Amino acid sequence: MSSPAATLEQTTFRTVINALEAEGRVHPPLVAVSPTASVKECLAVMARHHILSVPIRARSGGVGAVPHSRYAGMLSILDLVGQIFTAPDRQAALDAAVESALPLHESSRESYRIWDADVDDDMRLTLQQFTRGIHRALLTSVAGDPTRVFTQSDVLRYIAADLAAFLPAGVTPDTPLGALPLQSTFTSLISVRADTPARDAFLTLWQKNVQAVPVLDAAGRVVATVSGASLRGITSAAVAMLDLPVAEFLAARNDGTLPEVATCTKDTTFADVIQRIVRGSLHRVWVLAPATDDAGREVCTGVISLTDLIRWFLAQRE
Image 1 (spheres, one colour):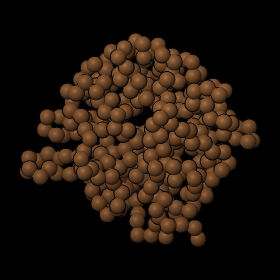
Image 2 (tube, rainbow, N blue to C red; image 1 turned 135 degrees about the vertical axis):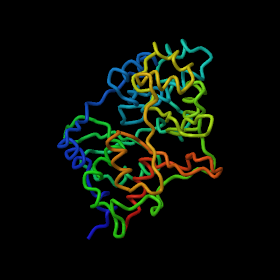
Image 3 (cartoon, rainbow, N blue to C red; image 1 turned 180 degrees about the horizontal axis):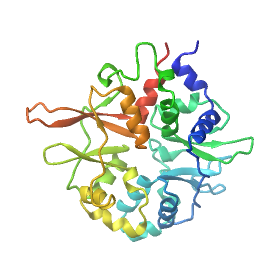
Image 4 (cartoon, rainbow, N blue to C red; image 1 turned 90 degrees about the vertical axis):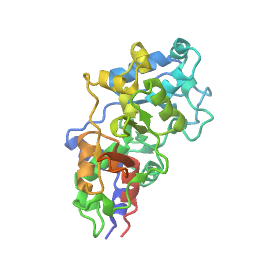
């Protein structure tokens, strides 16, 4: 009998996609951008399609071109914001060709390369990449299916639909998090204060090459999350909003109130965490614990991300 990890690895992308589509989650056609489009135009495309990353078409023999590849790289919204706010002239950065934002000499960035696979392949190699911080892959097809983006979230949604089938002996959906070696703990918490300018908060993500950080109030409580998803739908016309304090920026883009923060404790059940992520289309939950100063407050001690969860599932070999 296959282990839960082996069962997951042997599942094909097509099986996952078909299962998700049966639940009403349709993968839209791939959107790509010309390398000569401006950063401003790229932002507009991403806003129009409500996406956070986009493949940049390759020039034949040009910047970032990879032999036999149609794409030079895949840029995230954070890559574009980093390009804009590290440039001496914002407007010039917005008008520059989007290919200038490709990190040609920074191999640690996800946008440096594109991970791809055939839709009828099993997920083994791609899941290994997902445990290393790659968040998405391009699915091509020798059978002529349209190219599409496949993400860590797709994997978690597939698992969540039959969670017990992917759990090892001794672990149930009601097992508390404190009993599992799951969360990423912080030796030094990267965070931003609520009054930090939003542009600096997003630059922290880009410069530290992290996906999200908690926003803390003066007492050290988590009041919000800042991530690439916080920039969904932003266009060049709204770039000036990033000069606002980050808490004000997040509230202004959420009908005047801060978005709810997804948190858990060591007593939260495994199934509850999975469902919070899936139902909220989240990429992480912050782990809280009582502060040591007896002030009755909770502080952030760790995070459970999609990468952490996929890594844990793949470790279940018995």
